[in-house]
Length: 126
Image (cartoon, rainbow, N blue to C red; front, top):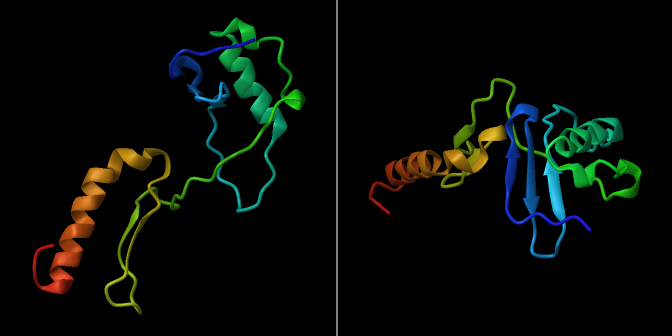
């Protein structure tokens, strides 16, 4: 049985391994721009698994067809610039999305930006 004690990033292969309390391990490492609902490319997933196995030999004997495979969408924009601001036809409604691979690393500046926009709309500080 394979067990991972903590998160692991295999930088040279751009692969990340994340253990969960359930004992499952997520192995991730691709970023594909695809349409919503696109199928997960099993060959790409096998390549990620093989890359992880270079550092974690216990993974070497696993076949992607025997594993639960899924992919998660990351909201991104064509120019990689997040969309942050009011929704035109709905006063007081704001959006902050499209952070792509930067995700939560932009949480603080995004929160500050949205706060400034809301304060300007309300005319006072929240």
